[in-house]
Image (tube, rainbow, N blue to C red; front, side):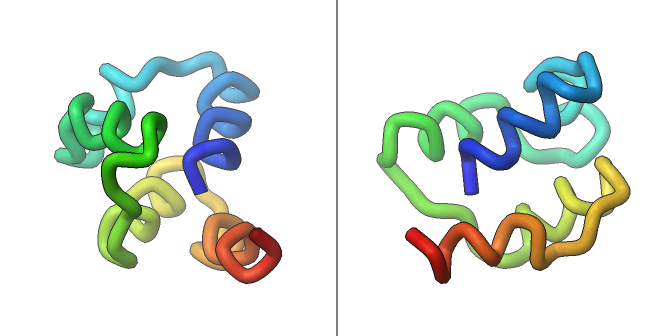
Length: 66
């Protein structure tokens, strides 16, 4: 999930700070996902999907493949 988030973030030219400010997801949460300390629950990927205007399945598909 995190890698797909990074791809979208970079393609859209935004930052973790901007996404965090707009979604209410803390920057430390992104760090936890990056290092594998935690995995996102469905509510947070939904917020990110809404922020980027992509379907939630964009993030969930990786979980099935991975």
